[in-house]
Figure 1 (cartoon, rainbow, N blue to C red):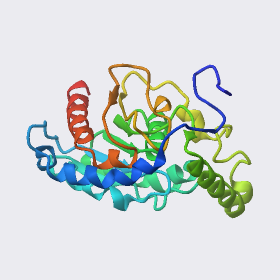
Figure 2: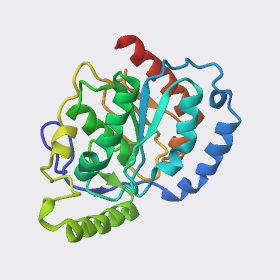
Figure 3: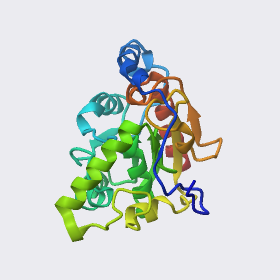
Length: 256
């Protein structure tokens, strides 16, 4: 295992996970709509703070619409990432797209904002949080392997295809190690820095994850790591996840 001293894995590796179970995420959607939490019952409500949502690998903002509408329903001001398809150099996505929407949220709410990212989107949010600690109140990750890309082989193959496309499209504008754990760009450098004490962090994961190795999705701090039942894709529609998000956002408000 190629792991630096700070505990982040440098090489990509195949995870021993069962990806076919991910097809069952539709059950999570059904259960979410049947849950009182989805209608804002039995959970703390927001204070109008901005919350920026970032989609996972090969995803767009569109599949986060239910999370977006729910956040608005419970008293927050949600924003989509605006990054388009998440199949691009993360450093470029942050610089040229995500930061623009973060600036918009800061301007319109006039206060620190919260970041929520699913899968690769959560890895991106942690990097941004370290880059902009004075602007970010909290960061919540959903099944995000921010300690190293250990995933199902189909995901690794897709990531390699994306990497080749990035190098072909951007050439010298990106580093040759772009889209690998060995890249030295600001995205990875920021990701691997220790989160500031002022940052309220939450890592939600499932041991039934069929896409990534859940052990790379946790901080190691029992006060920040939250386990739920379900699959990787379903974390974006999981009623238990929504409950944790509501509680953690409320806690972040009181600790700010």
